[in-house]
Length: 117
Image (cartoon, rainbow, N blue to C red):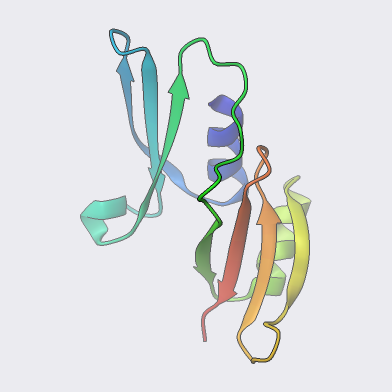
């Protein structure tokens, strides 16, 4: 959990909105977001840690999340400088003009950065 929280806060710039520990059910939830998350009308990311689980399989039905950024190339540079992994440099989407980039979290999940005009 801490490795993912560190990535999403330090590298992506989200903040921890709340953490709920459920010892009887043997899991902990951490909610992250920008600003105040759902209270501001923004999305929240929920991370789950299940007690005693040392590894997880990549989700079979999950593709990636996408975040809007003002400048995808600058975001890639900032993320790389902070120790994050850029797996697709900023550039136009194939067959279009929207500028995107992809980064990867510590567990291998892809995060698309979409440049907002």
